[in-house]
Image 1: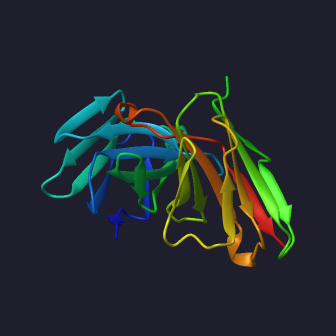
Image 2: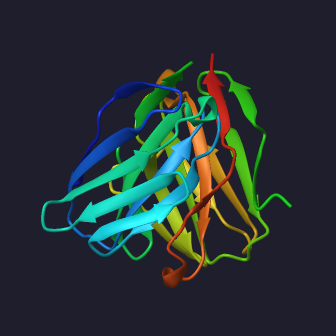
Length: 109
Length: 113
């Protein structure tokens, strides 16, 4: 079975930084994705980590530690439009992803 | 320049009345997926196609079937929808393994009355 855990909800203020943690125990590991999903819309790709370390892409960064089964997504300079659900997903085989339930981030003015 | 298209965006069906959801893609990707996502839950993979090879998840109910007549189109058939099948259904595609990413359509919100 696959077990991917992330917090259910987080709230932060506009301009602040928020870190969303994800821990995983899966039958296979070929990389870890973060997706953003606005309410009622499809998930959109944010980042992909396959090696340990930090990947930075603009205001968003993602970190991976394979030995710890741990990743985080860092959102900097939060904007109102960043209010969304953030999904952690592990690539458990060449073509299959296993998703966490998502973390709903609410950005307050 | 939509890449993964799902129709309709909203579908209402009656309990037990068969319904078909459709997905098309302009990416020419080999792999197509159907996910079910209920409120505040993870997307749950129902099945996927690699070209014409169908791969069913072990816990996908028999009530759910799929067809892929060609590279561009994929259909999800729910033979006898129950109230518990009300959900967002997401179609996604993937290309070569090295491309990593799955590309999602906008989803179809299914309501069962």
